[in-house]
Length: 103
Image 1 (cartoon, rainbow, N blue to C red):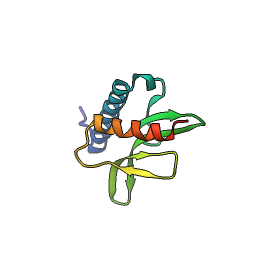
Image 2 (image 1 turned 60 degrees about the vertical axis):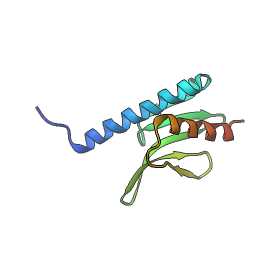
Image 3 (image 1 turned 90 degrees about the horizontal axis):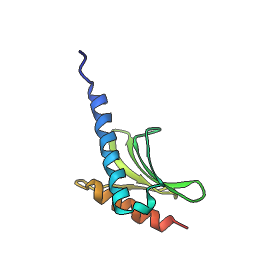
């Protein structure tokens, strides 16, 4: 039996975390459940759809030697997350960004 590689374990951990955030989003705002989508490409994450083909997305981003969860907004901006933020904290931040960009 082959043991999973560290990359496989990391990807699984990211997928579980994204799932936790998606569940927290749907718990905090059940009215958005139709707009909450888990994504696997180009990165693991969670997306809240907005009108006009826009979205707010939580994704695992890598830049140089730094990898972290970020929230991408419809404007060309990334919001870095703070160490220790829970899935509920992140869901709250994503909902705030969604509300700011909702029409």
